[in-house]
Length: 318
Length: 318
Image 1: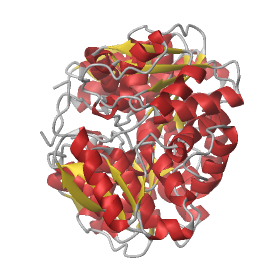
Image 2: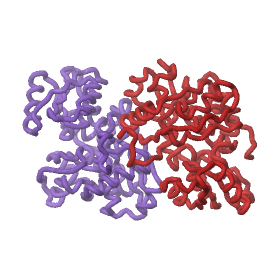
Image 3: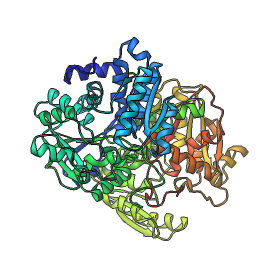
Image 4: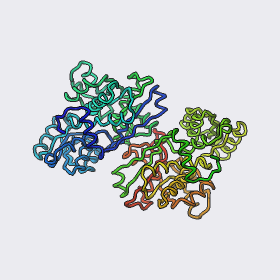
């Protein structure tokens, strides 16, 4: 699979076959309590229970195992302050190749440790987008490693799309899928897979109101980076890229936004009722239900809980 | 199934057939991180993801659906400050019969609300064992309802044993099962089922050192209620009864104890790594691994995470 393969059901199915042995087939959980409160049947896809604690394991693993042997031998590089770095390090370790993860010097210690635990090499940069990209380019030139971007990469997008394949294999007749959006890798893959498997399904993206570049871009029909994002949902503070926006514009039915208070309340409900540790970004899709931003009465709704990595010493409701 | 049926694999399998449609077949999760730290292969049975958030749904449902129609019609009664009350109320609601739950007047509001949410009637008593039992007897006489004790009941014990049936269906060749013990209902059922299905398996009970009546009784070979228990593991503050002790003495290989600090550390690890909300009692079995109280090097070990109900505003590591 090349980095420029089209994103379609075939490439997503190929990704699934490639990564199945390396990732968790995460459970889909239900709750009569949350169903009663929503007036709908909810099916939560638990990517917080995925390897490295987030869906990111899917795309990174697909990218790494898509490389030809000669290409792979020189390793992979990315810039990431979050879960993609750990996911890429893990995938590289599984393949037995080097991983170079460029991180801002102020990245939380836990994120650094996660990369190192999987044998990745952490390379620090200044905490700016420009420094991240420059540093990654330098590593790439020095090592000959292949750049695997966190979302602006068809192999990564196809890997993330396997989330929807599994969800629809578990619950075939969903009416709606709610999916969080940051850079758009997960949303692109999920939308393409879902529409191919179930053409009548509605795919609705959910975004923090404080990081609403997708909602803005979707409304005006072209990609606008938007103002600097601000949200407790730290996994969604990235903006789209042209490639993910093109897929989103084509395959996503609507983009809705949720408040910070709604994210926190939703996160707490998921912990309390589902007994699942979900990070703020992971609770954003459910927040659209809690805040009545979607019409789902009587419907069957898939809700993607995208991850569960956070600092347990600082819970936002305390 | 009568309250005095023998506890054996047949009665546990019958329980499983009876309750399967009403309970969750909970997932078994694994973690390479926790395996590396333990030097063993760990298989966590997630009863925190069970209906009502604890394994108690199994036994209560089996008891309620074991009743003959005429007997069931008058309802069920129990005294419980914890999860059994909610589990019994839910099972009664599923069968369409009344449930009377006797609770101490100082029971946490969340526990009262859980019973009410499932349509149960809460009846308050003084916070003493004598008052609990007297009040339950009075309700029993007034209503003709059937008493379903939280653990001193073969139907309940058989229902809890279905946890081990599922665990061994998922992972057939376990060497060891670690199971928490309070009143001994779960432990009895698990030990009987596990030994019948896999005679060479070791079943090891784990108990907080501050509530060690099982360890004491096991050591001297007869049931001693022990001193008033004290532990953060509030689900394990009950003592055994003669009936559960008889099964434990016959089928359990060892009883080990863990410290309060070990319970908290284990709980936090399970949240951080497995992304699962596990209550203190639910983390006790894993604490035996964290505190090196069991010899498991290189073995395949089932660990029962018994529940996930707790107050999210007061986390013990904060």
